[in-house]
Image (cartoon, rainbow, N blue to C red; front, side):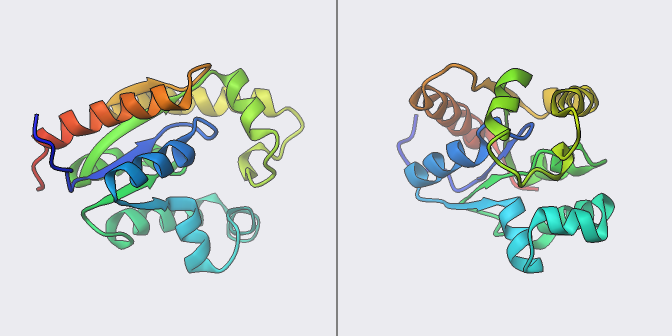
Length: 181
């Protein structure tokens, strides 16, 4: 295996609270790539929070902002992109990501996700009376797409260093075979 660092983008997808930004930050540092969090990038462009966008413009508007980010809002090389949980679920978005780089899905149990997200009020889709019921509904809708995204790496009850090593192995293997379209 070559010791050179791949230039191909890495897209971390998966449900909210699975560790995409945390793991992405560590991977970007190791690869000397730029870390981009799609939600954060959209907040910067819009000069407001995701929650505010959802409240004032609605989810369809936010999903269109995600589409624009994927299509033209980031460099084509040397980026680790932590994608918002719903980004890859939109029709055609998974295929777009797979053409732009390596896609890895991070996964955790719904109990772990609820525990991780309950401390963060910036989750507009969970501003409901029963967050676990909402998680179950969303996950049932999204799981088939997440499973098609590529390698699925579990993040429950594992040391962060193990998750990072696993993502790095998958990324290096798939980046070596990746050809830009």
